[in-house]
Image 1 (cartoon, one colour):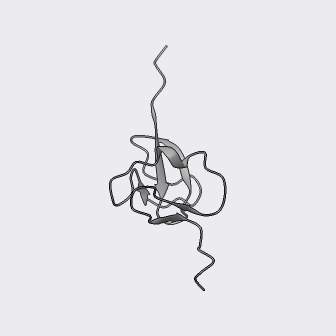
Image 2 (cartoon, rainbow, N blue to C red):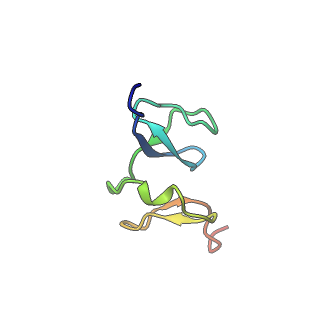
Length: 74
């Protein structure tokens, strides 16, 4: 029996969803785009984001908004 394929946290830049993917996966399972990212622009991986609840999420290193919309903006 083959060992399980390791999964990598990736974020879709189009729909902002975080999911666990295989390394070779290039399409988002939600919207189908080819805009999967493995890390924030600052280099921080997305391991922390897979199980975070809520509609708003920011990168803990650089503060970039990764999911949701801040109430301060229209």
